[in-house]
Length: 218
Image (cartoon, rainbow, N blue to C red):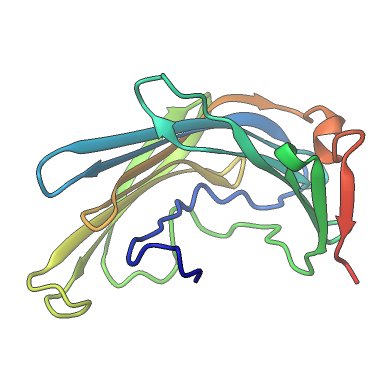
């Protein structure tokens, strides 16, 4: 902390859809994020972004990370980071376009299979099967998890009810829709669209030409 920094304040980070490094299930798609928060005075804040994701037949994953911006369309959601994960070489690039650099790291373990649809395996609440529906041309299985945080558990003076909803694609091995509705954080919705099956452009899985590589593997 520097002396000129103000006291107090909070930081929040959204955890988006998880993409496992599954081989032989290649695709390209867009993840659409919407985060709605209702403040104590009744005002609502809505932030959005749309980012590119891709996975090739080897299980390599490319992801854009974009800034969340107001829904009014007056601000551009710029790419502030890209990530390339390679389960074969067991390494990952984290690239910062504004600095024209990529950090290369060892990543010893990857998730290369998904055994269950929905959210977490461990859930103390109620789980409801929502049936099936087609999303972006793919069949998905719906699950809703409801959990109640008892009064006093986290300093709350009354129970807090939270809900999470997932629509899981067996073909891609990942959720195509994930909705988290929690009074503490607002409503967070992630939805996959524009799915194109098949191998993406191979250039996505290499740092852009001219990028400075910072090798941290040693």
